[in-house]
Length: 369
Figure 1 (tube, rainbow, N blue to C red):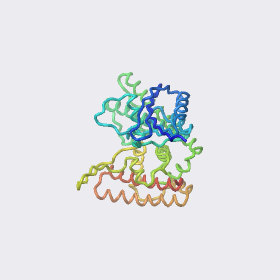
Figure 2: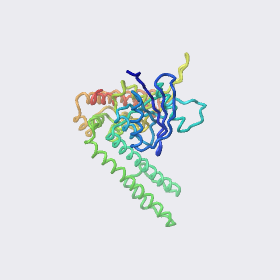
Figure 3: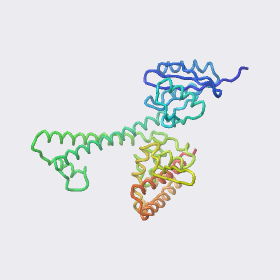
Figure 4: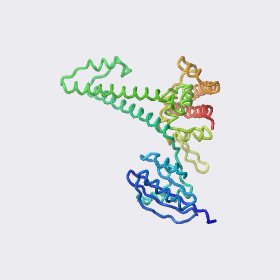
């Protein structure tokens, strides 16, 4: 019987052509650049089969990017492991200023063989579709914010200040319609801006309704419903958390989830000197932003509202116990930090960090590893 052979393949993916490099399995083995291959699915399938016929074990990797996970699904469907690598966690030399497809493919093959690459979690097609829908809703919310800011800036430029505090209510919209300008062009600009706000708001509402319609048919719908038992967690926050974080069971403890979301303090310590600063802000910014916003609700004393009561009745007793424990602990935490003179933003960030831990507990209860 011949000796078992193993090879590591690094692929620098692109829209039209993929650069491929191969590193032999033994340490210090030869690294070869195979050139560029057409990026179509059929061409990559032929390449993978041809390479697999020469070796016993073939390991593939490529960087996560705009090309998505199609190549990963193609390679794994052929029975070979494929890692989608986090670009920000790839080791790079500080003085390396040359970047080409060839060098990137060779570097990926070498690092994959050395075990120095960090793979991202790859969702299935249904999960990816729901995540795209949630991100489309987030983009619509950002568009709505921009259009509203344009209206506010336009009114401020012309010295029109709304006499009340809360804006974008029906009374505020009536106030906008009552404004008159000396030049008709200004009136047209205001009407176009207000119409853009209306269309953007309708787009957000349509997408939120679509999320609610598709949710019951999603495999992770029970987890989304269970997370809504926590205070400050509504449908949008829960579905965003689940779609962005994915498989919570890959985090062995809540501290790993907190670090993944960038909610742990940064540290630069050496010897006897210990320096801790602000949070790292690593990982997924969408979830981190929503959890900090949800943490504001814990400034109130613990209580169960009428809408949250229905959410609690639809969950298990263990989830209800976790939800109430989160309310009592995080509300007390908010008050304690506020009494110590901490800024409200710092307090909410600390509460958001612990809220992520309770969400981890709910996820492990609903979908154990």
